[in-house]
Image 1 (tube, rainbow, N blue to C red):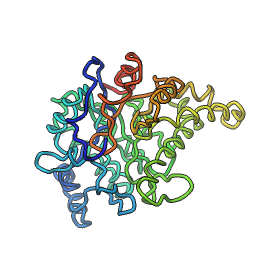
Image 2 (tube, rainbow, N blue to C red; image 1 turned 30 degrees about the horizontal axis):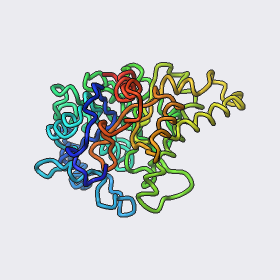
Image 3 (tube, rainbow, N blue to C red; image 1 turned 90 degrees about the vertical axis):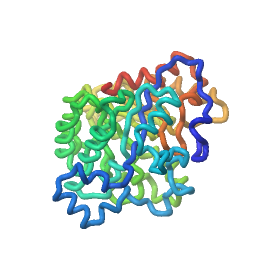
Image 4 (cartoon, rainbow, N blue to C red; image 1 turned 60 degrees about the vertical axis):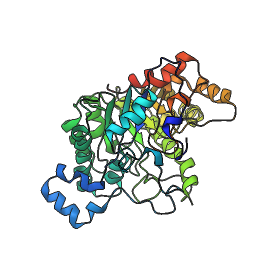
Length: 374
């Protein structure tokens, strides 16, 4: 659906009694970083003011990678008072949860991911993501609105600080996952182990999601081969980052070191996962002496412990081809997501209608219920 298509015009699959767990919804601050100042220590507020932080909404992308109409968020998703899309929980309740029958929505703050990776230093990052977490946990009505749950953000610039943040708020019942905004270091690196240890202790999956700074700023993950020239080129090749990080998980030994830890690849799509797993398994069989810590075929680990979001949904001209791909990959690998309030969102009433009802139920809710801490 594009930026000009109002949510209310979407025809829903109203005959279905399938629950929907939306694994990718993006809340926003109504006034940029200054919204968080009441939640920060005074000394840090003064520091950010001196650096102009009160003027910052998120990491600027510049003209090259900005959406052609100026915003990746849908224009019709702006709040009734003209605020940024995703900034009003009451409007999100009506426009997304009620309008589309969403039983649970996982909130992932891309602003927190942007400030936590390339817009700040390690110490600043820890303060900022903590304030983001407090804002959505305590200012938004998550305790009352049980359909909204938070993927808490951790700083990845300092994994020990990220682990401390999980200890601070990871036990809150409103938290269902840990959002790790990636820096330019693959997820299987032992550098991240303090975060993984606390994720296991709190029974929370690791959620990986593009931040919008990918392949734009130094320190953020880069796509392969070189620097893209425009928004569409960057958009269609972001899945390369997902591929590289999945291979890193499969060969690094993370699955053996942390036998209960689970991962979610959100907004990297999933069509690439099947041929990549073929290649990973074949390579492991041929070269397993080089990675003796990988004790089982990698696809077994992935089947048990990794899930991929359906959005952005690749839609071939013949829907039967997508169904065949899902059958080959295994529908147990997929979790549903809308990517609300972004321009390319996929709403449940219009998505995956070619699947059998039980398979569709599995993708729209059951798989997510099995990996999120709900």
